[in-house]
Length: 284
Image (tube, rainbow, N blue to C red):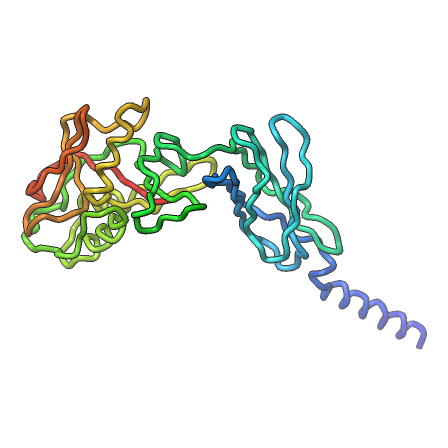
């Protein structure tokens, strides 16, 4: 009987160990930590929550070459934090880890480095160059969170469509805030085979481990903002050359834009089968 009791105890112990509650193990480390700038010299952090048993997350920061110090704790299942205690032009590095009663994550997240500053035209940001920051009259404007337009670093080249399409899509618009919708209309239109919209839709770029794949063919008003890079060392449009917008003009033509040292000029009625420069845009 004693041997049977001992054997039962061993089996019960093994069963209990195999069924050990998640609360008895440390949480998995978070990953894909990113940092973005806000207008008010705030830095927003976002990460991927890989754990199911954390009590919360600890955020650590170092300024310049200093040591990491804990600056905040957030609850379980939270995957973002905004650091509002930053100084303009200072450089910061962030990392985070999860914790519970059993301890802390065995590793930190990846580290991200960023300089606190107000976003300006020409800054390289989220995969391209900022060409415009939304103003109060623009759709999507926020007085506290920056939104705007980013142009890819380089031109591509191609027709508005991949063949001589003679049917009017009829839904595209010209204003700021419509490039993405225009692109969607072009791609989803019956008989569409490719061209400028597909070039932009297929474009992606990875910067510091983050992939940006939400690019579109800009509307004619959005495309005009590319001229804001004319005096910048990078991303400047090619002068005296045509660029496609996503704004349609007629059944067989669309609106393009050319750039010179004085500004941007809209070009109406360019045949859709013509080859022009294509510059992908995205919104932030």
